[in-house]
Amino acid sequence: MKLRLQFCFALNRIHAAVHSFDKKMSEMSLPFEVGQTVELKSFELGFRGAWFRCKILKIFQKRKALFFDVEYIDYPGEGIHSTKVFQQLEGGNEKCLMIRPVYPPQCRENEVDGGLEEALVVHGSWKVGDLVDWWEAYCYWSGTVLEVKENESVQIELLAPPYGEGSSYEAQSKDLRPSLEWSLEDGWTVPFSKDGEKRQCAKLMKQLNEDQVSEAESMEEEKQRGAEPKEEEKQRPTEKLKSDEALQLNIMDSESIEAAVLDLEEMIVRFEWLKDILTPDSSEKNSWIYEDYHPSSSRM
Image 1 (cartoon, rainbow, N blue to C red):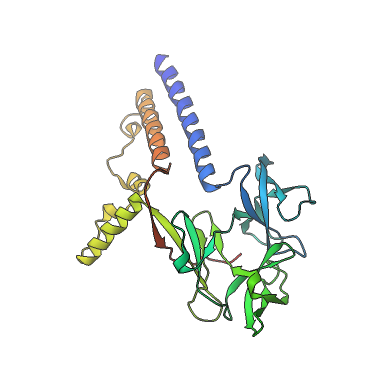
Image 2 (cartoon, rainbow, N blue to C red; image 1 turned 30 degrees about the horizontal axis):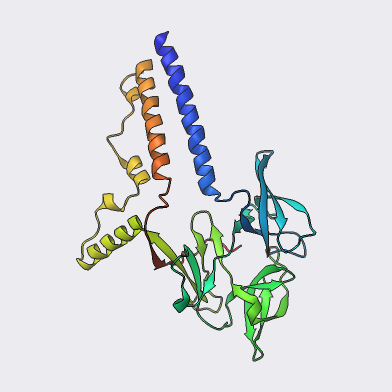
């Protein structure tokens, strides 16, 4: 009877640890909070592919789906708008994330502010094939530069339906910004232009923390010596956990309740350890580095 009570107690603790871990992962996966300024995408006919600047007022769940209540910054008379965070295009299978962080600051390469965590360095004038966002009617419309004119204007084509409205417009160069992609896995990335060349109209610069700087320096030293890093050094902590052959379940050797209780206790410890390594240390030093682009499977 005593062992069964211990088992139930350990099981309750593991359930609490799992719930806490799931909550932590959810917070990490969606880095948004009430009061934050974000950009919201629309699939509404007439505004497809447009990004609106908004402020989050409320985060809630409805029928197991995540919703945000937002107010439009550039449409003060619109009132509060509820939006489903993940939406599916009509006739499509893939869910699209409709919200992303506020667009990173833009600057020239010699004007980078060392106090910024991330900055977008714009290379120069626009070229045919550049992917841009056009500021028009108090929102940003994503499209492609078709023609560069002499009067500081360009001809652009918006994203094709169903991702955009697909029309062509003349726009002023000053009203354009580079189109960026944002995902939960990679953050901000700069897509390649659609001119047949592997070219980007801007470059992202991000700061590295102290550990990342040390790791980059170690990798560079290994590269200069012509030696490959050890396999275990390439692994992230979570990968080492999966590949550690020494981690064995007690219940594999014994089907007793005592063995199950020990396994549950060990799982609690591992959950706490995972939570610790997934929590960043904001006090670490930072350094700038250019962010390489890893193309996604599809452009939204």
